[in-house]
Amino acid sequence: MPRKKSTACVAHVKDVDGLASAALVKMATGSSVALADYGDLIDVLSKIESGSEVFVCDLGMNEIISKGFVGEIKRLSKKGNVTYIDHHPLPPSLMEEISKAGAKVINSPNECSGVLTYWHLRKNLPRRAALLACYAAVTDYMDNGPKAQEFIGGFDRQYILMEATILSFAIAYSGGNENFLMRVVDSLADMKPPHQIEGVVEFAQRHAEKMNELLLTIGETGKSYGKFAYAESEEHSLGHVANLLIGEFQVPVGVALRRDPKNGLSEVSMRAHFKDRHHLGGIAGRMAKKLGGAGGGHAKACGLRIPTSRIPQFLELLKQELDL
Image 1: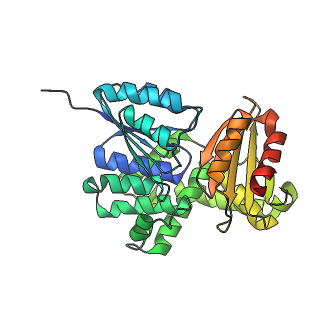
Image 2: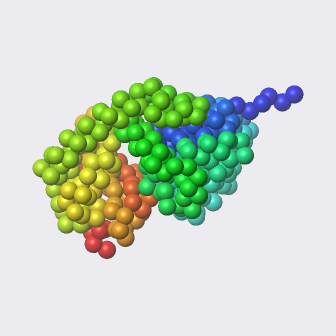
Image 3: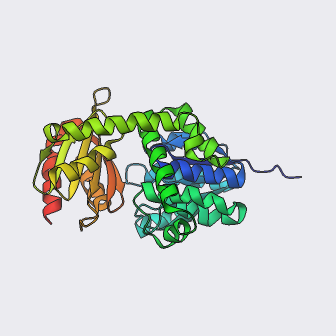
């Protein structure tokens, strides 16, 4: 009798969308879960045994990692199966390359990864598991997608907003604590609501207090550059800082940056007002290429990692991009 394939899921470590996607895969397949960011994705994949059933969720591709990613897909697909689920823009040529390497590609810019994962695995999931997709859609600013609207309409919206927000705040406050994040994934896979997961409410409250402090000081720490406002911060959740900048300075785009003195790199998060016409993910990809970094995302939210020495050039390039 042939040996049954083991199942593994690798998902984005930083937000509700990635963790909810991982929980849905685990619930539907009984998979093991590894959480990764773009910098360690290839290393995480390289540790998965060939012959496995592998799901990769909410990890968009860029030129820096695509070659290594395709190589791992080829290795894993020789004896196993790979399903790549993501919502970030994927160039047709790269989509074709990943498909030819052996992966089943599920990609749409209209829905978040959590929604795409639920829809793909829905036959093996209880209807109530759609709540996880709703949490992902709300916190990823993609609750206007056709499927997301359908799912959210099947529950109480205020309940979804509360659970999604405390989960997002708790993840932000955790600062990437692996034990806490894995507890979240395991608990969501057991259909435990966020407010009942150990540590979530406490962490969310602490993060809310930090947000309140930021509201009082962001006007002093930030600076307006016309069409965007910029601030440097030590906060783990730079996206929340970027959102506060939009309101404080009444600009279309907020930009938050955190320097890492250990490796000479800086993490950047950008958020856009819902009326802004720019596609931040496309801007991030173009700038990252020019600056020797990596980046991408979707229309209203994106992230980059750039050499710290090139921050002044980054600011100048962003001015040019937003003036187009």
